[in-house]
Length: 252
Image (cartoon, rainbow, N blue to C red; front, side, top):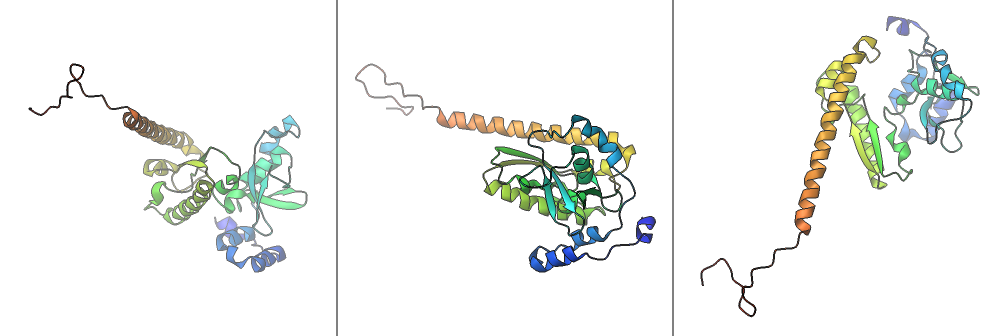
């Protein structure tokens, strides 16, 4: 952290100022701050280069969210007329946390982590006409509840996720979102880059997902049971011998 503070920060770019003037309602101080951070020093390209062994082919339907470093705008690689760079460079850019990893330059433009715009970016699927979208949101907190020092940004991430899920639901898309509960957040700790916590985090996440899916299955089974009971036709009363009056439980 001290090294990050010591390195020179960038002044706001002309593109960032222009974008803010054109869309002042979309100005977000946190995104602006990320564009001004000094470039990180860890290069991800060498680790992601293995993905380029498959040539220029992208997996069908793959979309990767990145952020332009010069103005903080979100770009979705693999969608519409957005750039489609080599897969390794696209993945590296989508993972490049500002200030820690070096931004990835593609066709003269620097990109970094799409999480700068949103930790989840679920709203990019609002027009995809999907039946179900499963969202994994490790940076927020289940139910928006967190009492640790991470509470401010986890609550902000939870609220942004909520707005994105609303857009999906308004489009008629079913959603299932996973946000870490208290036990999972405890396993994650305060440093998301701590590799030594990986086994503990994986175990906690598996437990939480299993419990969530079990609860969803039980709820679905209960709903089906109620629906079946509601559709079952009533048992006709015992009418006795042909031509006689129906009998009731009351004494005649």
